[in-house]
Amino acid sequence: MRKLTILLALLLFTVLTIGQTNRFYQGIKSCVYTDFAFAPAYAATFTLTSEYNPATGLYENTPEYEYRALSSFSYYTLIYNLRFNPVEFGEDMGIGINIAPAFAFSASEDGIGNINFPGYLTLNFGAGSTYETAKNFGYYLGAGLEYNQLFVIKYDDNFGLEDPVEKPITTWTQPMVIAGIRWWSKNNVLKELSFKYGFGSNPKEASGSNVISPKTFQLSFGRFLNY
Image (cartoon, rainbow, N blue to C red):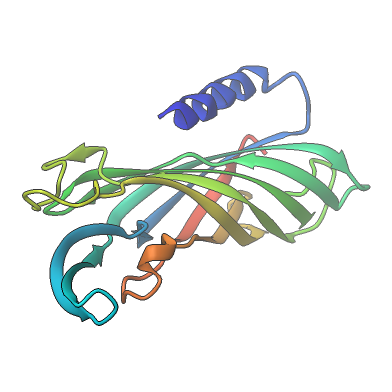
């Protein structure tokens, strides 16, 4: 929660400074059935297995844990993208610092609503890279970190388990990469299509389980604002 508060404060500060420089860029994007999230694994239940230890001549109980992971699918996701170019190389290339908070309208038996908040650097080319470019087409590549929260409203803190070994994981931070293309529409609006992929790792104890590692997939379509 502390990380999310810091990110929101950063977003507020940057929004308030927009207009003081011509290196800020804004956009709105959305996902329709193209936003997925898989949380890290956690130890849900365990069983005791009795094994004979010849060194002690005794039977010893060894716990075997069952690992599970929460996942979510969004029907519709709304994304606000804010970029600042600290460096621009001529008219057709710029380095951007980006934040793109997103709220996913998801609903399942576990809860409602997800939050995704990435912060990342991008290398931008062509259309959308600077305000001076005359290119009709552009693209960008980027990488950074993202904060995730599944189920802003949870129906059950234990997600159906009476007494889980560990609390189910609903918030986590992981690396992410993003790529996108931009073009001018017939209505003279700068459009954008992008794909974001977040990737993490499960706890070492869950490495032998069949639980998928934490991931996010987000295919979005949107437009620039005031460009």
